[in-house]
Image (cartoon, rainbow, N blue to C red; front, side):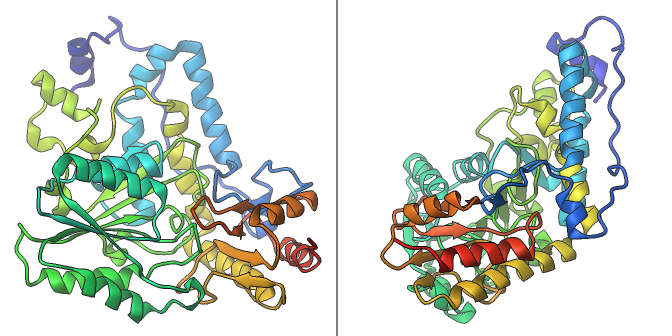
Length: 430
């Protein structure tokens, strides 16, 4: 589609070629990322606190901050022309960076503002009918539960919630897979799960679960096929894995947590052979707009175009997301995973040795990632976090019906900070 014609049709053309150049994005400039101390220097996080809650909302590394500022300045100086110069290409650059990180097709990636937006877009867009069943768990976050409820209200599908484990610290791969497969019925069409539970730190064995579902699908036709959907936000940015390896059909994740992306950004990935199962809920301002204008053939429009919500966004943030993926790639996915496992294993080993602490997160990195939940005997979780904060340690509590204290080391942390946390918890008093 020719850009000028599109702009003229939409009444956006300014009558002359834009005087502002389109931004060009490649790999971020070479950074000094030879050790973890240098990586920590990319963040302006205060040095007088130990930050153990970045899983909620992360600080931006230098390349992301610089990209946001560049776009912000251009928008402030000449917002309409800068947007016109870039709106048809900027998001393509972001999708390509995300696809490079995930080793998938860029057209399988829609851009969202958060995990919640991605989940709502996914579940409320599923082509379900009365009698179809959605199989989910009792371990999922509010955003998943409510999105599924809204979807079921619209399409009259039913929801069944199962418990995959009783004690999170003692979970086993085979037991989880068995409980899931036994719960699948002939009318089950959707499986909706969370990769890493922010309530307990359990990381579900998604690869083994999807493999089991694929075996069941070999006995089904397209009209009864099961689609496997994942809220992946608390593994995304840590785990060295691709979408093909994970094996699911749909995957939603915010990118402003472990991936250190701009605040208010996220992705929704859809496997090509699953695209026909979902209908958009929010009109796109990309190629579908061109179809509406009669400028673009419908067959050119993909999942990425249809499922990226239209409207005006915080473009200085969205258009900077590619720099976050570049940053992660420069460090190396395998290095990030290894370092994250190292720090979290160190923390869990230490918590396990403290007599008045009960650790709820599995020790095995195959079943946990970077969220560690625990209780201190005789002390409310909120008070535990308050006492840690007085020691300059920033933790959090789990926003669920059952509340635990939570610490989440990542690549901005180091061994000394983990040791300081353990000493503070060991010496904590009611």
